[in-house]
Image (cartoon, rainbow, N blue to C red; front, side, top):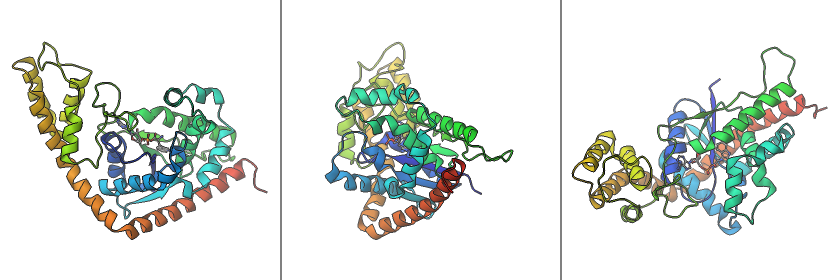
Length: 332
Ligand code: TYM
């Protein structure tokens, strides 16, 4: 059997360059090789404040961005998490093998608590267990996600290991769950335009969207902090370091080296750098935006892909669930 791959993105609106380079690029690479299921994880979306009225629209935005970026329904399966309730059922069963204290210690949980102090709910704590179930319900071995998700993948591995140990099936080599690994892309961490932290949807000014036009990209880059343009050492962190990183990603290592040379000698003209970088970014995004228009104009194609994805995913997920219930003694 082909190796199986699973990944998902929350429905918090349109995708940004961090999502693209950290997660979607990996999905694109793997859809050509393996049995892939890619999801919009709407049940994870509702762990932080959200608007019921716009949730369906936001789910659709992610699906369209997936397709626009090149996920091909002939090569992979696209599905909406809540349409396959086996994820939830498995999450409950797996939660019985995992300690609460480990979940409370998780940096992502602590960050979210700080970000939304009035919205600290049980599902937020449970988030990594549901994420483990998303992956394990398909017995996926590879998970294309960015660097920030590594602690969650580690929890999925711990849960798999513990379940396999607690509920062996008696045969020597067989285990229920493989231990999933993160599939690492070349750019597993895209920095914020603001000079500190990662590019993130929840930090205004930090991101560029896949859907941004040339003028918007220019505007966003124009607001990125810089310095006087020259110095004795190339900055390793902050606004300039992040701009140089973007140059490297979109315009290549040689161009970056040229700017570095300038920084150490005559100085960088940031206005020109940003202008040039904006053009470089738009060149990558323009074909994605073209493709998005195509799918926007053909909703039946999108619906069809989601239906097929749901059916395919349900078949696998229900088999896993039967096996798990059998091992736990829940089936007569
Ligand atoms: P979410 O929606 O927060 O993030 C989506 C994906 O984008 C990646 N990412 C980045 N990568 C590099 N640089 C950045 N600046 C950057 N910002 C975001 C994230 O690493 C992520 O891959 N917990 C998941 C959703 C999820 C999931 C799953 C993923 C739920 N169940 C099962 C895989 C498998 C998340 O936070 O997505």
